[in-house]
Image 1 (cartoon, helix red, strand yellow):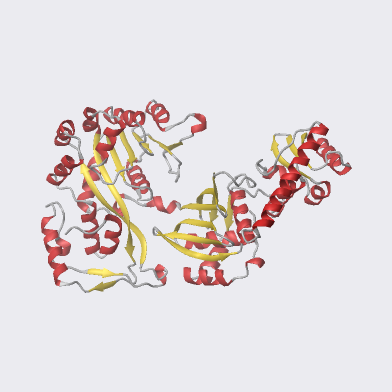
Image 2 (image 1 turned 180 degrees about the vertical axis):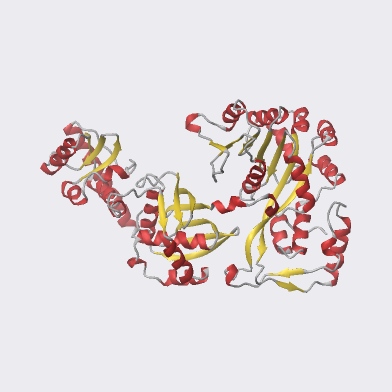
Length: 560
């Protein structure tokens, strides 16, 4: 990553010099009848780099870049030098098969840059995991009791004195302690920043991280994630594991090139997130009964709809947890597998092996499952196989990207599914979003205007009879956020789902056959006592779980 503060003319000169070096390396390769490689685009293997000591590599102007079994690819600026020949001989004495490539010295220097990450732990494996000892984690939590304190120290800290490994460890530990779902590393002009996503909201953590430290951080994270460290022009995906106290936390990593350098997002997959049971999802008692009713049926398709990040995976995993038993075989096909579930066979989509949702689902059906989870219905073939499985004695769970529950049917029709199939196969359609939960330690009762109280009473009167109104019989209350240490002064701590359910049945089938439109399905849902997502949110606000503002932020202006 070039220094974005450098003079544009100097940058141009540097670029021309590098291009000249590469052309000279190409000519040398041709003269020696050896292959040429440009290390600006070629991958560098961690295990290969370790084969040659740093001092010897720099003295000879070489680097080992790939290792496959006993076959080593060695790049050299001068393959004919005595130093290079000695290294080749040493490798061959160790039974390695050495293939020599010519590369520019500038390119080889980029490979040398990785020694600072590779040899920090002697001969230990340094990719794939991070160990945060219990004492260290507790020390971090104690030292920075709040995100504000961590932010203050980081932005005042002397990054030049920090080891990259320590900085990575500190950022990860604080992210976990702050209950962050994602960590964003963003390259800007002349600087960089780090942000945490907590309860769906992004918060600045380090505002002005020096470019040098940022480059080292990115290299370290790519190393941990088993990515090609020196390849910066194309997107990459990887993952690693944090060994923390008594649990392992998976980190899914995505890197993309941007204008001022590489940008990384790390998704924190805390296994405690899947410990949620059905009662903890935030479902009202009447909605919970609908779920239990559907899950106890021997077959049928349950569709969970909503955008990315709306909690669909957590909900479906809670369903699987409820269904899981030694008497049932449960198989999933996911993209990717986010959490590992005990007692359940999980498979992952792999396009390179032609294991797609449709092909995988077709194979799964032949495995005699009782319950099938399909990560997402994206095409007609997957939809048709899922429908057929639901009609032939399987409980099928899946997701669909629609705005609300009734929108699932027109979406399936758009994919090409026959309306005659949809009605009999579907058992329950769910739509959900996530709203922030008020902090129980600091939320405050707010004054309710009389005009608003009147609107709320009318709202409650219009709700279906299945909704329990007992909680509101003694009076109506609303709450507002305040902020305390428990919630990092946000006023909110955690998130909870707001839902709407559309139950299938004989009338549902009739409506679909006649007119599979959202208008017709909404009328049917209302006649069957469907509680809309916004209405569920309002009820949760009246119970002091969230606020009207949060509900409006997610669902739009409240329609009293």
